[in-house]
Image (cartoon, rainbow, N blue to C red; front, side, top):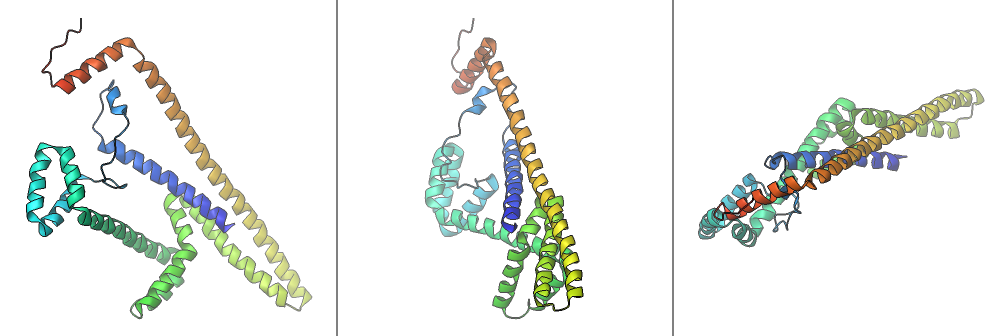
Length: 276
């Protein structure tokens, strides 16, 4: 069951990541004209910028780091950046690979530290006893602290992630986790108990726990189903928009206008075309 829960959480997180990435790309791109078909051309190679991309801020950080190691090369790249962007990208990739790799390491380390800090705050709210136990060993042996922290992250991390992506799912998983622990404890007590009366009491409580867990499992599946429906609705919307866009671009007048604008852009209006 825990494996199913982790799969559901992963699906929710993936959906959130895809949505965030799509929104970020849309925000970064210049606003397209109503009939600008050329923006749909497949993107070329990333020129070694890495999967996470390279923003202007990132490029500036790489150049500043390179300037400390090789001032002459950094100055050369500054000049190239103004004249030929493609050559600049190639030159930066070749000359500043150590700086780019360090930037990537810093990026992921920053994300890791933020996730850990957020997890500790979440732990303090939802499992205060566990957080206090961890805090007691913080100033001691670092290896003991890291081992304890990793244990808690492994134990509660999937619930923490669920709270971030879908609070209701997080609430369901948290309750289910507590019930699983109670389920195991009741089973241990039943195996050791000698009193028949006490066994009946434990059995009655176990029945309630199992019944509640059943309801939570069903709700967990419902949440996953709702997420799939949402993704399906989004895909249907994209299909409808794509169909309408194709129909629009098949219009001969729109084709002529797009070809005219593209040629003017490519020739910088230095060539006069007869469009009549």
